[in-house]
Image (cartoon, rainbow, N blue to C red; front, top):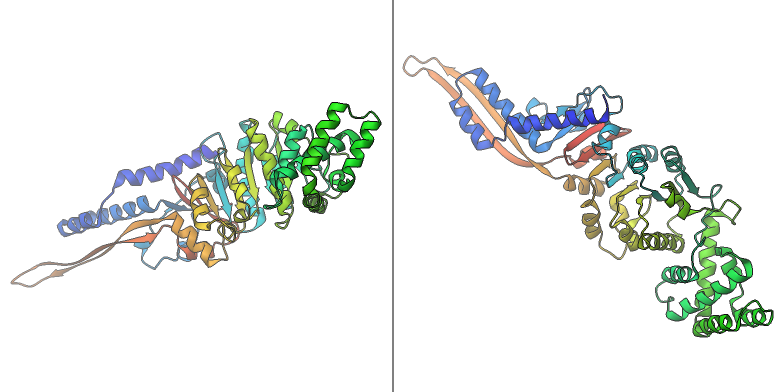
Length: 461
């Protein structure tokens, strides 16, 4: 059975329960009062059961200990879920895959790295299948790199031992200067700094033929003016070129110290991730042109300048009309507001051991970011969470359902004077969590709560 058949069968189950009944507690109470046979009573119980499932829309695989997993009582009537009948050997992946050809935005959170990577596979595969380039930013996730390499038509892995991040390849000086200026820490960036960067880039490009983090940081900025004079005397600059570059230098000279400190720090962060550049430099524009995949190691969360530069680079590419899907892995979003800007207007996947915690700690309110990001995703894949606060947050996000409970008993009265039946009927309705926080806290191994618009599947990825 293919993934379309699997998802289709789940839809039929949900559709069947919707068609079966949407009874309310009051309607069921009235029906029980009027029931005359055991068959009628059983039918009313089934209507309540179907209504509960319609509202909850949760399936699990056969053989799963529902009492342990869903924390239900001994009353079978509380098991308002259905077994997910399928012949597939990978039902969870099939359900994550969905029934569309194109990639859909998703969030994968909790559990172990290997399971999260596996859950991201459909996003990468479907992007490449639809000729959509994929750009993944990760914090040293080698399993993710391997998965992307195996599910892409062409791939560049930008990390230590693979391709070096040649960010300035083929980029005009104006864009280089803007990119570096945008990345400077708040308070250091100024028109003077951008002018100085422009003059420095012009000189480095002419003297060395290429621009890297290393040669920018190594250039003696206090001697830039002397270098310009020497280049003019040696005929390396025309009079017009000299006047233009010198004008940039004179405008930017007050920012020499802040620019020098910024370039040194940026270079240290780049070397900490990739080491010194080698011959296998990346070619991101080529990969975008051939609709390939690019995985960029941005190092750990302390490499704030380098990560900001990478985000600015991708936003510059997007402003130039480049389209691609984005995958963010292990990145605390609250620390990098621009990462949220990058997610807009394109399909994305976010993977994090604790997505909820990644939204708190920055300047922007975590609640606001949570609503914005989750409001644009079509699927959630939630593995076990150790944080009670995250479990509760996800449980609230998955919502509540209106549950009907029935208590019914009947006894016969054999009195000669007034024979008949005595009925005890109790029907109540209450809002309950569709997936309890405790359930997310005790999901075993690779078991995941996979939530899509059609319903929720609890299965092993």
